[in-house]
Length: 180
Image (cartoon, rainbow, N blue to C red; front, side, top):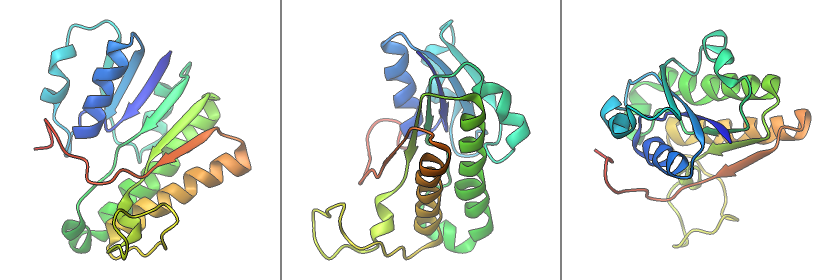
């Protein structure tokens, strides 16, 4: 299988790249390296199954060629963290919303077989119930949470209107090696 992983040099993305390569898949890694680190992919530098490209997901024409002949897209790229999103809401919107629409459209035009969007549990705000069920009310409290939720809604919309096979996941408290 040939896969695109956006945000491939980040914490979650680099672990996904590890797994996909371990399973023998071809990986097209896209990252602008604003928060991701090339060192996170260094262990695969000689792999013929991996191609790494420095590109901004919000730049549609720049990313579009990388989606040709791709089976699955794992869209993980995004700006994270709550407090910085309060200080830089336009940056968060550009990456998390405009970037998501750009990736969705590139995937749709290329006819990918599956699109996996990485949303965020932050859309629930401060939970009233722990563990928080997926049925909890959506109450984003920061620009980060709102932009990730809007991105999720766009992904689901592309699935409904354009029949792009979409899955959205909302990770909770992800941590481990390479998390900084």
